[in-house]
Length: 313
Image (cartoon, rainbow, N blue to C red):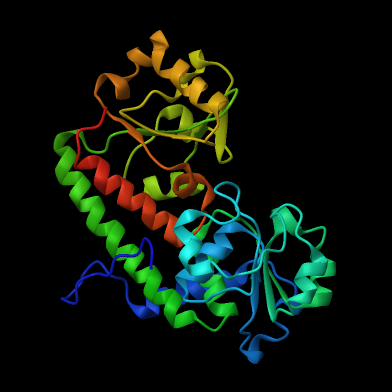
């Protein structure tokens, strides 16, 4: 399975108990759902349609092949890291505009949706099948745990979460040893787009992973609310100056590449700590921004391992 690394079978003091994970999973039931969400919970649904990227990723992590998925944001129609698992799965349109007709034709037992994307069409979706509505699309551990409950894969979800906690604990320890007295370095995650740059915040999908690994944040990033801040000019980079820049390009477009080349040639860029220290980490935007799930998060850990053990410029 892409992006998951099994812990050794020896004693693992950093792995939480099954009881702890069970409390975590059951605690998610406090999220706001309508009674109809769980109307057929005892029917052991086998056919699931996922209407956002993190849910599709989570289904694969749980060992489930959905009967329908939405198109990916890039690398269409399906992200490369999921293609082998989802090659034969039908598509039901865009995440922002799924086809109700295609969904109904697939006769799902349950539909996984997000409040942000699908609240308006939720009443129509509920006429097709029970709907599980996630509050946030980027809270990947909650998505995995809740889908495990809804799809009767709770044990599998607990195992995946345990592996994640073991792996992040091990990597955090390695990072502390690597950076030694410089621990923890501050990080800014920069998303280069055609006409601007976004800097992701601690509450974002990639930000939550970086925080869990123990990295620090600039004062501006800690003080800002939301998941990202828009840097409308290159001079704005000063507010997110950090020891490490994690950089990805939003899309494989010439205009995005030109914006990135203009960025790294800007005089202010050369004055930032990360470029001066040779700590500009180029990563894949699909894993770091668009995947939204546990498998994508594990690919992020793969990148961190690769980059901290290599000379980065």
